[in-house]
Length: 179
Image (cartoon, rainbow, N blue to C red; front, side):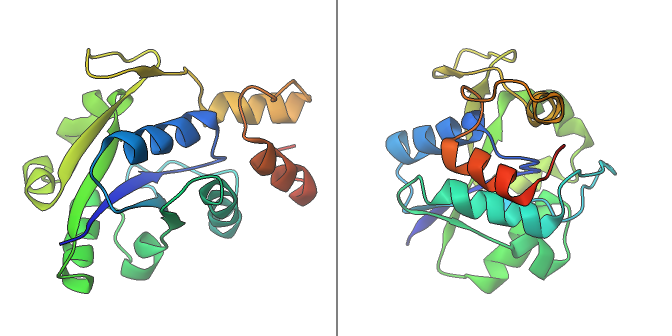
């Protein structure tokens, strides 16, 4: 049975931390594919700066940088904002697929707020990825970069050469977003 790693996030915008986390999972985990899953509506009410369509387009730009990677609109298609509900939906849609869920260590503190996290671990194998500022001793620590930091630099005209993949930066500049 093929295994697909789901890497969900706001991706507002996707940055080098996302790229490196995806590359790390593809290089070290026995997954057949990695799907970037942009959040359609945030379960905790977080507002997005970029539209869903723009964030999907930026994720598609990012996916072109990685092997065996594609963008999934599963959250939009399913209407499910909670991870457990999305996983249930994906199990119904793709019954012959095993699922893995990429989770940054920055989300460890939020797990008690998630709907039925125990069920999530039954539906998908959790792949922890250490995010800078949130080390937990498992694997390499990825750079400490956030979309909030990237948006602030985009707005102020700061140097983003170390924080955004070149193709994503070019797409943002062409679209004129995050100013």
